[in-house]
Length: 172
Image (tube, rainbow, N blue to C red; front, side):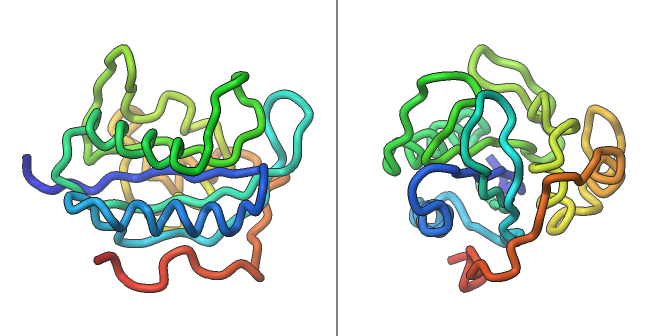
């Protein structure tokens, strides 16, 4: 498979979330078929779902020649490495990694839907994604990420200026 760019979302609201997000990016630089090319700033965001602490969110762009489901499996393995346990939908978590976009691929399988089905309604995804991929066109709506981000309320999404960069170098 030729190398394609993909976009992922990272989130954490349990434990030392800044360290967890940095560690997740570091873990994603290890597999030979993945290159982390850029990361957004880190944002604090109000949670969706049951009462819980605020989230730390970011997005990253990856270049990979893995198939979408193989990349998803890698993301799930990284989550497990950081102790992710799935207890309740939209509940608190140490680490959440979502595959948002994979080139211009549109697909639905029992385990994966691309583009991410709720990406277009989530400011905690669209704001950091627009920072690093403003011109990427969502293959379903035909709108650029910046347009999608402009169409949602940014209330409760705050850039964390004091956070260290998630990526200290440009990929591998």
